[in-house]
Length: 193
Image 1 (tube, helix red, strand yellow):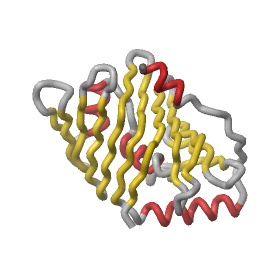
Image 2 (image 1 turned 90 degrees about the vertical axis):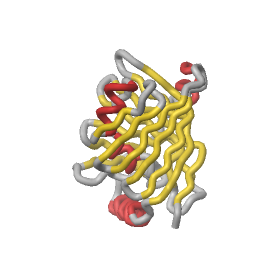
Image 3 (image 1 turned 90 degrees about the horizontal axis):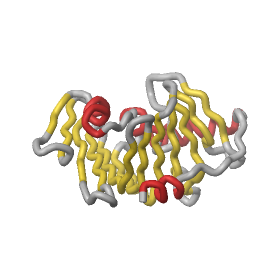
Image 4 (image 1 turned 120 degrees about the horizontal axis):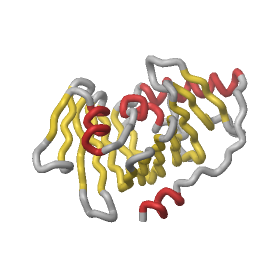
C-alpha cells in the first residue's frame, strides 16, 4: 500500500526556468494574497521517508494563524495520530498511550514518529510560497507558477497545480533534503477569505 501511494505521488518532469520579472512579480502578488489568509485546511495523501523509516497516510491539516492540527490516518495499520499546537507549544496524541507535549513540534515528530518534517516552512510551501525568514531561490514552470523552491537546504518541487483557484494552489508537492522525502498529493484546499 505504501509503495502504491508513493508511486501515485511519483514526480513527473516539469520544464522550468529561472523566471522573468513578470514571473517574480506574479509570485509576489500570490504570496501577498495568500499570506494574508491565515485560516485554511487541506486534505492530502502524505508519504515521508528517510534512510531508516518511512510512513504514509491520509493527512487532514487545519491551520488558524499559528494554531494547527495535523492529523494522519495510516491506511495499513488503521492507526491515527494527531499533532496540534501553536508556535510555542505542541501536543502529540495517538503515538503512545499518553499524550506527549513539548515546545518543538518538529522535534516531537522526529523523535516519536521518525518523520523529519520542517513544519514551519511546510506551512508556506504547501501553498506554493517561500517560507519567511530564509533566502529562497525559485524556478518557474511554463505558466509562470513555481516549479521549484530551494530554501534552507530543502528542494521543494511542484508538479501540478489547482489552476482553477484564485490564486492557484499546489496539487502535488515534493520536498527533499538529503535522504529525507516528503511527498504530498493534495486532494482539497479550503482557504478562508
